[in-house]
Length: 152
Image 1 (cartoon, one colour):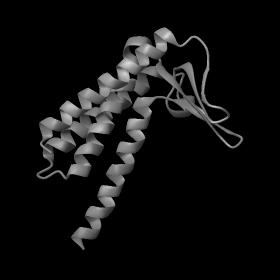
Image 2 (cartoon, rainbow, N blue to C red; image 1 turned 180 degrees about the vertical axis):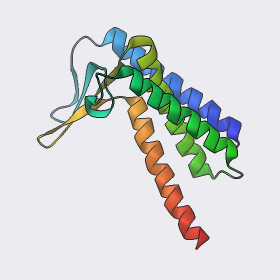
Image 3 (cartoon, rainbow, N blue to C red; image 1 turned 45 degrees about the vertical axis):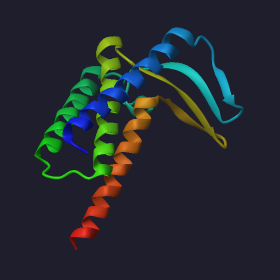
Image 4 (cartoon, rainbow, N blue to C red; image 1 turned 60 degrees about the vertical axis):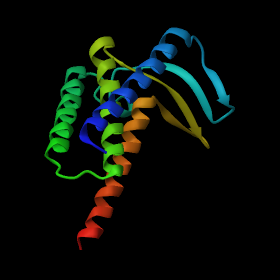
C-alpha cells in the first residue's frame, strides 16, 4: 500500500469515528442495552486518557497525542518499504489518534460510549478510536515480531 493510501485510510477512519461520536453525543440520552449483562451504549465524557488517567492534565494529553502523531508520520515517511499489515496498522493508529485528539482539542474531553461487562468486571467505557488504536498497535507488534523472524 502506498504511503498516500495510509493517509487516506486514516482520514476515512477519523471521519467514521467522528460521525459515530456525533450521533452518540447528540442522540444518546440514556444507556442502551445491546447484549444484556455484556454490551451497552452509554455516553460518557472522558477528560483523561485510558481509564481516566491524567484527567487533571488535558494539555499534556494533547501534547503527547500530537507527539505520537507526528512521530508516526515521520517514521512512515522514512520507511523504504511498508508491508500491507504495517499500512493497515499505521492507518488505524493515525485514525484513532486523530479521533481522540480532535475531541480533546475541540470539546475538552473524549467522547466514550462502548461499555463492556466481562463476568463481574466492568471494563472502562471506550470508543471506536480507542478500538482503532488498540487493533493498530497489536497489528504493528505482530508485524515487528514477524519481521524480526524474517531477518534471522
